[in-house]
Amino acid sequence: MALEGLEELGEPQYKGAEAYVYIVEWLGKKAVLKLRVPKTYRHYLLDKRLRWRRTINEARTVLAALELGVNAPAIYYVNPVAGVIVMEYIDAPSLYEIIEAKPEAAKEYARRLGEAVGILHETGISHGDLTTSNVLVKDGEVYLIDFGLASLKSSEREQAVDVHLYMRSLESTHPEHVDSLLEAFLEGYSSTRGSSWTEKIMQLVREIRLMGRYREERRTAWRQEE
Image 1 (cartoon, rainbow, N blue to C red):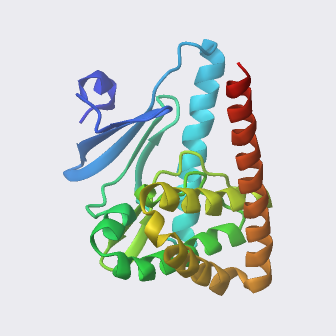
Image 2: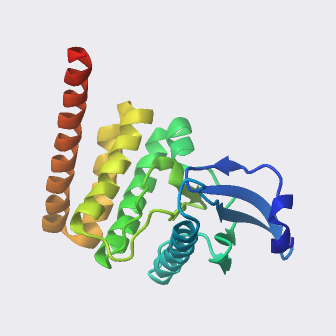
């Protein structure tokens, strides 16, 4: 496929707030093309700079994860000016789908996910969108995808947000399995980060969740007062 003809890509497989995802053929291989679309509400130069920076950041984060031994899609091509990344297509079910079909088997994958996230956090990388839909399971291994909101130099709070987002995705889709899959995740996380650090992160998670509940309660109160 020719990148000069991005308009010929057809309908995207997925439309996100920041990017469109297409399934394409790249040098004879099935691949994923992620295109960061221009935002007309932003100033042209600011939008161009943001898309350039975020494209570079995502590619660098994926490469850093791979260097650490964390499974992620291989990067085939990056064009930050066009806001394009072409990467490996991984033909595998998501952790969300595994939980739906085989919740008992999902525990081991949750543990492995915890290990992988712990490795990333150890070096300062946060994923930024750690949901069960952004984790694929292939040949017994977990793969992290969609690093669009990732950070290479994350704070402790950003790392806690990763854990919070994982918990929230379980609560919204599989509430009956939250306890077992969180326990398995933390077992894996603790194996790479240690129990004291894990407890420190979980304390931050509790603070984040408490703040979220407070804000929701205030919104409810304001609506009732109207």
